[in-house]
Length: 178
Image (cartoon, rainbow, N blue to C red; front, top):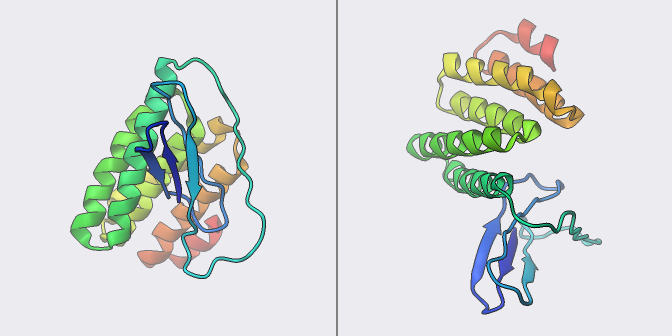
């Protein structure tokens, strides 16, 4: 988890939406100048020892695109929290949050995040047993991924599509996508 605290000590954001071993992106539009503090908390109870790196990629004046990306990240993080609860109701709530994130990422023009939201929604529909929606969202993710020029997004979209076929009994199609 990455948490950011503002100059007054108030927590401004908390993000834990990536898998273990993957980088976690956190975006913030600062409303006041001052010293901001980041806190990293491992997701695992016994995390591996090693080095962690924090990279400040873009420091620039906020635009509408930035606001859309931040709104998307917040909705996605809320969806992740709901999804981890694991109940059917919580997963369906997560889908609503992921759908909100999807709309914001589309407005921001972030194709990799659009693909990620689509395959995440597809995977959620697998978990609630809705094959038509799972298939529809993962097919959309596969179509969106090449526009992102992100091989990881393309691979995950293919894997999600394979999971749909596998979970609903079509192993031949699943193998073709793995």
